[in-house]
Amino acid sequence: MTVVAAYVYRHGQRVRALTLDSVESLSLAPDEFAWIGLFEPGEAELRVLASRFGLHALAVEDALKAHQLPKAEVYDGELFVVAKTAQTQDRIIAYGETHIFLGPQHIITVRHGSARAHTDLRAQLEAAPRLLAHGGDYVLHAILDFVVDGYVPIVDEIEEEVLEMERRALDSFLARTEIMRIFQIRGELMRFRRILGPMEEMAGRLEHLEAPCIDAEVRPYFRDVLDHVRRVSVRVEGLREVLSSVFEVASLLEQQRQGSITRKLAAWAAILAVPTAIAGIYGMNFDNMPELHARYGYYVVLAAIAVICAGLYLWFKRSRWL
Image (spheres, rainbow, N blue to C red):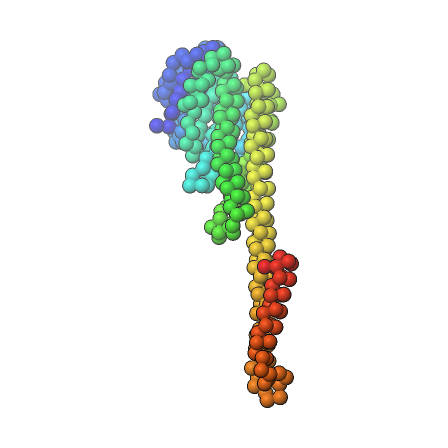
């Protein structure tokens, strides 16, 4: 069903339930407001609500297409807000949208692609009737706060993965799959940052927006939403920097390890060059070679090779090449 929940509230208390059939003939008292929640509705359902509550055609069209960036628009005294939801699916950040129509006596939420229903949020607000008595504008703040709070587990999950990558990079070489994952996370964070920017602008605008459907005493609540978005944004920027540092550290450590291996190979090559050179010279079999017929020449050459190689080994050891 597209209608997830629909109720009328008076003084913060639930009064009665609504259906799409009863909406057309709905009559609200001055101290009542309706909160209707929809999930991926069809055009017919939205047209019914648009006819009853006078929803603007452009806003309804945006809510049907569901490919909008976060924004807050005022249409003939009614506020239309678009918020981006986010959740992780198979280690990828998947995005959805929540469209909110706020009028003097109604608030209508339209969710697309978001698995987080507002059921628990509604129960929390109904448990605090003093706050819910503010009306639909306070419900709007609560929904936006609920959406932004959904960003935090995503950032926590990525942060744990990035820190684990950092520890592995310090201990050993990063595998190809891990390097690819670094770039994948970096791309996900860049896309996430493109969502957080408009969310900041939207929350900042709501804090200072003078609209008939938002009371002056509720506006400061949107500052709290803005602070939450900014904190998430700062963490995302920090993760991007950590990812860059992880990649740089991994590259530097790999260069250092390769340099160490190269020095060791060069040192052993220099040591092995001594017996190779001496054996090569005395293996040419010329008759007139110095000490070729000496009685102890063989042992002297072996001793010379051993002394020179040992000296080279000690010198390379002190130079930390071995």
